[in-house]
Image (cartoon, rainbow, N blue to C red; front, side, top):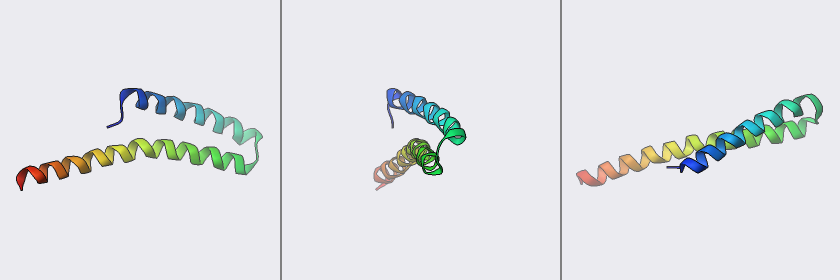
Length: 67
């Protein structure tokens, strides 16, 4: 599980990247817009992936208890 500090920092980063993406969409080259969008996607995926890993670990722990 991600710590509270990491979750809060990721939320801040998401907000900053969304803001950067909004400004870039009006003023920057497509490659820059794409790079910012990719970073935003990676940050959003990180927390979701960590949640999935937590669930997998729970299933493994439950299985080990029953074996």
